[in-house]
Amino acid sequence: MLENENLEQKTRVIFLMEKYAHYIFHRFFEKPGRDRALRVLYESGTVTQKVFADKMNIRPSSASDILAKMESEELITRACDDGDKRNINVTLTEYGTHLAEYIIVKQKEAAGKMMLSLSDEELTTLETLMNKLLDEWDYKFGAEARLYGPPDRKRGCDR
Image (tube, rainbow, N blue to C red):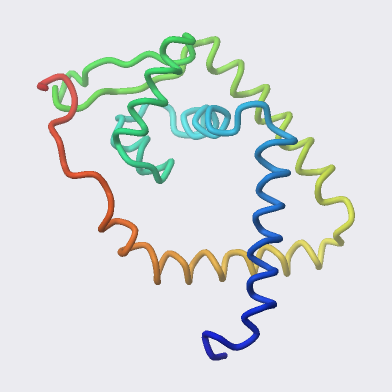
């Protein structure tokens, strides 16, 4: 299919995606960024700030800001890695773990409510199509997006 073929329909689909994102992130979840960060940390266990940024697909400076806020809320602890002082390890606190578990349950409940109108076959088709788009976008735009990322900086405890 040519790039400009069905451009109006493609534009409508992008706007629909934007509406869906609004529902997902603003109507069903209290703090979507924090909730996603908690889920990533819960699923990953103790990780370095760099690994956290990679898993969140965000810039290291953004990861640092998110983690600082989470630390002030006593959701995480940060400590220098004993093996490599350039790395900072991030770990959920007991409170952070309990909140993450609560959020995961709430997100599963919301996902169930949000997808009630789709059959199992339709869900499979939707998931396949969404993965196809993401794979294409990662291929087409991934390297381009990294070109605009932040410059490398000293990390960790050796600043």
